[in-house]
Length: 295
Image (cartoon, rainbow, N blue to C red):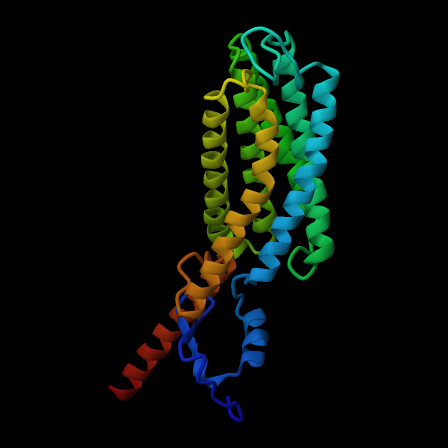
């Protein structure tokens, strides 16, 4: 690498394709580092500004989905309305809609499919360098969300007689569908870093569940919120932006780990493993031939 100046900022060895340490970082400039990252399959890096932009996109999509959710729930009497009796002020009706489980089941399908497809389109438009395979990703999202919907039908049917079940199942449905969809979007971007993407999506999923559970407990400990349907709107509120935040935060952290010379979540493809095996065998044969010649 003649003619390449030193950069005192980059003083760590860069990981090679299999996660080992290859080229010395102080031998290249920042611009050359960016070009080298494309060659050696470096993990995706996300700036703080891009993370904020992604979270804002999640908030916008949450707003759209919440309006649609609120409108449909209003049609079936599942939303906030004036009540009398044990509640004070504006609460939610205590009566459980006889088809609440069925309504929320199909609402979950609509919210997750429409929200994920809209999110994918916006990401493809704003971050086209990363999310290039829009058609393939869209097909995978439709397939996985359809399979998940079929599985959720069984849970909704089993627990339909429990008054608290439809809202909680809806909240879990939305969170898990977003977790599954986010993971697939990142898998398609770079399959070699699917383990890292899964870790980031898991962080976002856990953050969403923790925040959702805290808001659920807080709402049911107050007199004004007397119905489990409050969690429905809460679920759509927290899932999109928090899932994006958790995954993006991990992406930033892992890029820093990579710059320090480690790449523990890199998964080589079978072709890479076969190539590495061939090279190692050739090296062993060459070493054996040298020994024979010397002998």
